[in-house]
Image (cartoon, rainbow, N blue to C red; front, top):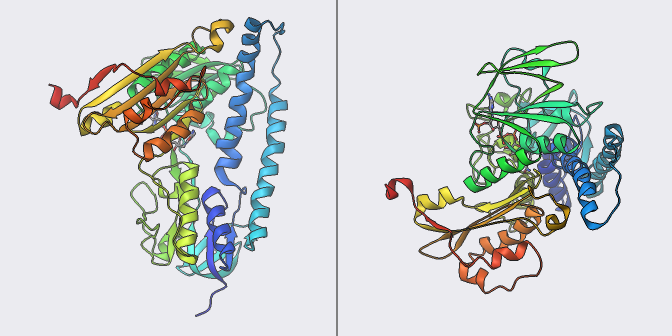
Length: 458
Ligand code: NDP
């Protein structure tokens, strides 16, 4: 049977765009549908605008710090509307690039919503379209919490187009998004409360990173509410009255929930194609990204595994090459470096101290210091924490963690060494670059402690 397309991709985000572009470049007849914004979450309402806003938020402190270096800098005012307008220009530019890349590769682009009729037939903007293979790359969406008055709050989708900077923001959650936006709003001058149900932010991250981040947020002026939940939000004329589970009342300008994301599968009619999902609604895939329907694949956040843009792109790229090329490019997904763009940021790769200890004794090296810049700036509360986790038996460095200026840039390089299986001796034999913060990773001589699994230690 002949189909309209060899491959049809539903979703023009990071994963879908890469998959469609590579497949089209390999000669496949490709269609791709996107009904909201080309580039998806990362480009439009995620990584890219978020990082621009993080950058904006750091200028205020940088201008103050410049005084310690002899600059006579007046306290400036930030104009939120100007930031949003500048951000929008850049995002529109990127959207255009994403769409043009697909056109340029020879894919047929549909500005339309697609849903399954059967495993080979889609309804694309009201018209039937057939494809031999179909890829679902519809991403995720923010979860909206369910307490009385939650509807008066926003989620990250709404945060990039606020008309003005709220003077007081109350964030819910202790994950990536809550922590990053706490830094953005605080850096731009808002009062920030962060309500998190754990004792520390970023559950699952290395414990030293978590405590260092809590200290950094506090130093930035963010008020942390560990172990707390919101039970009610009451909208007043100007403010919102937030009530916590311990009875505390916070009058705030904006309630912002960042309590995780869910796969975006609504309205796809997955059942019509025989595509199975988990109880949480994620599309189930095997190692080849294949779903329960043999010609249908899923990539990126809609599979809800490692929800990171570069992982989604890797999945899309490998899949296209596997289907239409020879010898797909592969990526190692066991030690994926990731960053949290807090202020200062976090970079992390490999095992946490706690995970390493579960596998056997681990040598732990920790260094904490005030960055050189702040010897003159006077910002003594801005600390750096760097940490190596070394498997004691093999002496392989199995984890590297950092909170401090440029941490994501530094950890990206270290992730290559860790993926290559570098030992602590390999790190020690490497000559540092002076004076940098990064050199600390190759000059940690004295072990801080040995970590062992709690059960074994008891
Ligand atoms: P996360 O999964 O990172 O964190 C969710 C947070 O919300 C956790 O602290 C969780 O607490 C808390 N939470 C969950 N449910 C509730 C509830 N009902 N009431 C109160 N708190 C709750 O989600 P995010 O929304 O921050 O980010 C979504 C995903 O987006 C991330 O997991 C990541 O994959 C991706 N992302 C990546 C970024 C990056 O790479 N820099 C930046 C932003 C997002 P608990 O720990 O107790 O479960």
